[in-house]
Length: 84
Image (cartoon, rainbow, N blue to C red; front, side, top):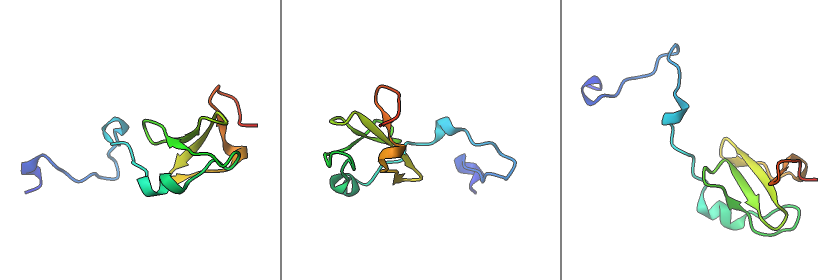
């Protein structure tokens, strides 16, 4: 019945086409309470929700498995370097 609708189960041998996956959306309530650990200012999710950005500090904090990594030493500069 699933095959009739064009849906099939993935086997362990199937490769995953990452282009097909939708972007993970961070919970808006979580975004409301998160703050930049350096300046305590607001952070905003980037377009793909793979990182949080503090425009005041020009730092980017990555998001892994829907968990924001809000460590200053793990942040990267919006200019491409590290956040230090």
